[in-house]
Image (cartoon, helix red, strand yellow):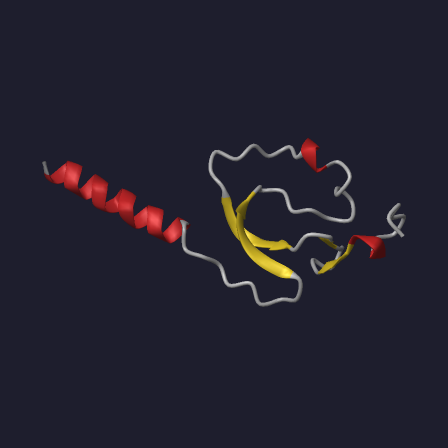
Length: 87
């Protein structure tokens, strides 16, 4: 019985620590429970090819719609990506 209670307590604790909301304080970012793959200038046209398959969502800061991460990990408008077809 004690082993079961200990297991349940551990599982509940792990759930709350993994589901804690992340604070996104950089411009053009928002918190989202999403894919393990961030949208970047390099992959925004082929994000469906993300090699990582999530068993559960990834708690992270993601760029808002119309923005992607550049090489410096900053969210910029897609039109500012080098070679962007949306210019």
